[in-house]
Length: 125
Length: 276
Image 1 (cartoon, rainbow over the protein chains, first blue to last red):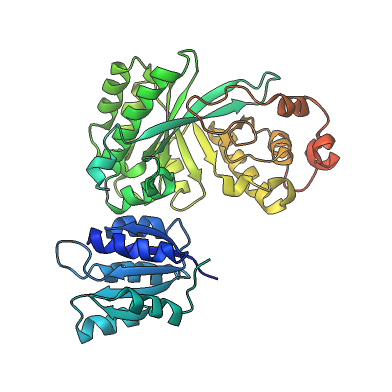
Image 2: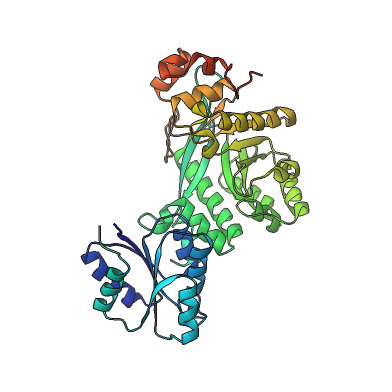
């Protein structure tokens, strides 16, 4: 039974929409817009799912992958869903190699996201 | 939340947790540890998240300075002047890198009317330090102000014996990980005893934190560890309780068996405990 989701994105409006949608369906969501904040949370709080963009900072580096690496290095028991508007085959392959269960293309419909969560056996509490 | 906003003094709050000296029947307050919390209702309200974030951003120096100023302000506003010691958590990296840290402590303490001789710096070593020379110099300068030195979380993470050699501490603080359950665990007692032995050899007092069970408290007392911090005695607060709960004090003055402690353990004759 899974319920706690960490959402990492620099688009506040998108993050808020995702949180509202998921919380209406019974998930518990926490939102951050910075890699270091996500890492500090992941080091101290157990999440069931991390939902992350690949380009989080305004510097346009693929820093979402650093979150995936952080989780992988610590062998955290968490499922990873990646969303990106700038997917390339290389980035997608790297995200999958680092443990992403699914890579979604932005803009992602909320229904597609819900389907992805169901596919990786994430259900509300 | 951006780090500079987070480290704005008004965003941080300070609570204090007493350390009691249980060697006397009164169990008087020996000192108060200042503990910083981030803004209420945010992720950073949890200290571990706040300081992991600070370390990930490599902003230990700025954070330590902010936390100290916040602690001094709350200490002056909420706590009696007569309290003996205030202990402050400081990263080893701050002592290494912040060349004006002792002067900052002196100046800030003066601004808040706090005597630096009442201060104890608890060194946190969450990541290793590289330059012993600067760390030692900073500690010498702090000592010249009358500040005492403690090593926090000894035995955890990077909290290691190198720091004992470099820092010449007055106190060694054992983390809850080693303390909780020590009454029932011979291996924990062996580790506590080894630290106590080092403390006696080097002239450092041992502080036990994370004491939550009466049987652990009796065990520590049997090992001649009398500086005790933990939820059993007082939770952090602003202001905190400054007296040990009556029922705990009564038990300390009575028979340890009433707290479920075996006579052998209470008398210090069980493996892992040697009376000094």
